[in-house]
Structure formats: structure tokens, C-alpha cells
Image (cartoon, rainbow, N blue to C red; front, side, top):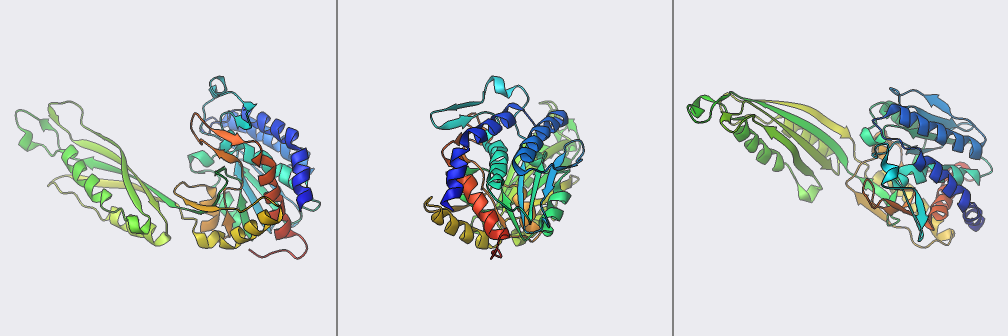
Length: 376
């Protein structure tokens, strides 16, 4: 296995060049043309390094790329090439490699991971049993690719997600995510002349904010967070409409169900006010049980590669790994670039870790698909 690491370290200049091509092809999720441009770059890299062209799958103008090698049913490598950065971000956050760090919009989340994926596969002699799926709408919740991701997960026995890793720890658990929007309807009135004739939606909203916040359960790892709120039109008018957005994070499916039932069971406090909730569970949790077998395998391989001790971490943020775990397939996340600053001005990748993490991915794929293959 050390030869895998050596081969990938020797190929680091090529890996950096591929990351640069991806980063310089800006691809915000909300710009389908830009996302398609980046898909073409990713397809070219994958074709060059694996010898096979991908299948293009249309997803509401944001294509997904799929490779299947042989049976393509043992392990799915999953990633995305869209970012949160608008076109033009290179002007203020240029691609650069200096002082052991690589920077540029989307480098950490997760264009470096896309390039690492293909470089990992390039050092393997046999890719039978491997599938690769890259999507262009992860950053907006995978509205077009969700069904495809879940279907690909169900036909495989394991999923490796090339999302990035803060500090090198793999994502062994991710919280499930729900989102709600509350609309409150009341009655307008003059705030000075006859406020008693109004039904004040700001007051009703305050009651609902407290009720929603009370659904938080720190012991269970559940957070219910009212976020964006709006109510009223002028200072001297009793407001007749209000709106509230709510973010929910849960560690278990049972908690996700509990909160959903409680949210839809809320009732107005003020006579005459009405509540309308939209939204609900979006991504199921990725529980530790879904990653345990794969993480144990990864830790052993990491040590065999002479790379030290691999750590795991549970996080509140979601990824498409939530969807594959929810589909019932063992999933290990955070196998991409090591660095930090996702979605932020200091987004960066640690260059020295690029071939090391790619070596781990290659070793995992070989163990899951090769002779004497491991069952996750």
C-alpha cells in the first residue's frame, strides 16, 4: 500500500493542475450554464484518469455525471462540483498555491475532492464494481439529483463521500435537517386610534418563536432555531401578516419525527390569528451506525499506509451523505480535502494532505472491490 501513496505524491503537480482547472471554472449552484461548464471540466478530468467517459444525466439544467465500471455495484464515490461562490469571486479570492495552502472559491468545498477522487482511481488496476456520481446542485439541497443519489446508493454496498474535512477528521455522523416556514395571518388596524380591533401578528409570532424554541432538546442533540422573521408594514399599523423561517437539526430519525409532529401541532395564541406551516424533514440523519464498519476499515488502512491515527467526528452540517445513509447504504463522509473555511473568505486546502487522503480513498476502494473484498 505505501506504493499507492508514493504514486499519488509523485502525481501531486498533476492533481494541483486539475484542482486549478476546476476552481477557475466558477460554478455557483444558481447559474446552470456555469455549473454545466464545470461539469465539462470534471468530465474531462475523469475521462483522462479513468479511460472512460461519463454518462450525462440532465437535472433541471444542472447535469450530473455518472461512471459505472464493470458491475458498478460495490462502492459509490459521491461528490459535487457546484459551489456557493458567485461568478466573479476569483477576482477577490484568486486561485493560489503558497505556503503549503491552496486557496480559491470552492477549493475546499469541494473541487479538490472531485480531483482527488479521480486521482485515487487512477492508481488502481481494476475498477470493476466502482461507480462515481458527481452532481451540480448539492449546495441548494439536491432538488434535482436527490432521487438519483438515493437510487445509486441503493444499488451499491457502500458509499464514500468526497466532501472536505476540517482538521482531517472523517465525518462519521451528520445531523438530519428539517426546515419550516410559518405564515401568520391576523387583522390590520390603526395602532393609535383602535389597536384593539387588530390581531397583531408580531405578538403572535413572538409566542410561536418561544414555542418553537422550546422544542430544542440539547440532551438528544436537537436544535430548533427560529431564523429569518418579518412582520408589519408601518410603525402605526397593527400588522396583519408575519413570516418566520425555522432551522432544525437532529441526531436521530425519531427526533426528526417528534419535532415535525410538534411543529404541525402548534396552534395560535391570539383569538382570530391563524398559522400555516410549510416545509418539513429535508435530509435524514447520517448516524454513527451507518459509518461504523467503513470507519473501522479506514482507520486500519490509514495506519497501514503509515499516515498515523485517523479520527472521526459528528457534525451538524448536512451533505448528500445524509441521503445515502437514509437510503440504507453504509456511508463514510469527509474523505476529500483537508483544510478549512468552507463558504468563507479563508477557504483553503492543505496541499500536503491531498495525496495522503487520495491514497486512503484508493485503499478503501481496493479493499471494497478487490480480491478478498471487505463487506462494510
